[in-house]
Structures are given as structure tokens and as C-alpha cells.
Amino acid sequence: MIKSNAMLDAKGLACPMPIVKTKKAIKELGAGEVIEVQATDKGSKADMKAWATGSGHHYLGTIEENGVLKHYIRKATAEEEKAEKQHPHVVSNEELVNVMEHEKDAVILDVRESAEYAFGHIPGAVSLPLGELNGRLNELKQDSSVYVVCRTGTRSDLAAQKLTEEGFKNVINVLPGMSEWQGPITKLEG
Image (cartoon, rainbow, N blue to C red):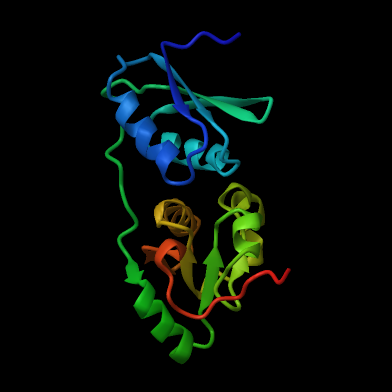
């Protein structure tokens, strides 16, 4: 058993709630202390790692036991902690519908998990879950306009920052994302 200073129960919660609750809980810890976050959302592994890295905290790893993901994160010292940044270029869902009508070469990148994508996605969107982004960057053209979408804007923000760091020139985060999407949609038939 891994020793932690605190445990957070985020089981049954979907993105972005495990991150939201972790942000709040980690504030109560002392520098260098470890929190165990228990979650059942499979996407939380990539989310936790990206959030911890981006905020300066140390993502130690994840262990899966009986369908529960146990994420371990060490709180950063004041010197290590980074100001949490957000990707500066955003468009609304409504603006993306306009882009779809007028910018035929634009890429819509859906960074939700494949099951989320299957049950409803923007027509023509490329499915590339956040956890697979690093290994599949070569599938995207760096000079294309890339509109990144997820369920609420949290994962897409992390993905947009990553793409920009990797040299992509025109990356835009779509807010609030699929949770409030009113535009065209393709759903799994069944």
C-alpha cells in the first residue's frame, strides 16, 4: 500500500470534476505531501497527469484496483508551483459552427475518450484522446487551423497548450465544448 497524506474520493465523477476537486483538496496539503485521488473516469489518468505537470505538482503515477484508478500527486513547494495557465485563443461553440461553414481546411480535434466520441461528435472531427496526444502528434499538420474540443473545455485547454508547445501555429480551444453543443452532431446508431 502506498502512503499518502490525504485521500480524495472522485469515484463516479466525469471530467472536469476530478480535477476541480483535486485542485481544491491539494490546497489543504503542505508542500511535499501526497494526495491519493480515487476516480473511475478512465480519462482522468491523462487529465491528472496533464494538470499536475502544468501546475508544477508532481504526478507520481496511477494504480488501477478493481476498476478504481488511484492517482498519486505530490504537492509542489512554492518555488515549484506554476501559475496555472490557460490557452489564450478560444472560440465559442457558435463561432465553431461558423468556422465549419466557411473554413473548409480547419481541423476539429476531439480529445475526449473514444467512447465519448462514439456516442456523439461533431461531423468530420478527428478523434485523438488527450492521453494519446503525445504519441500521435504526427497525424496532425502543424500549419493547419486546429480547433480543439472536449466535453467542457478542460481537456481541450490542456491539449491546445500541448499542441502550441509542440510548434502548432493556429490552435484554438472551443468553449464550452460538447456539454453544450447545439450544432450538427454524428451519433453512434444502435
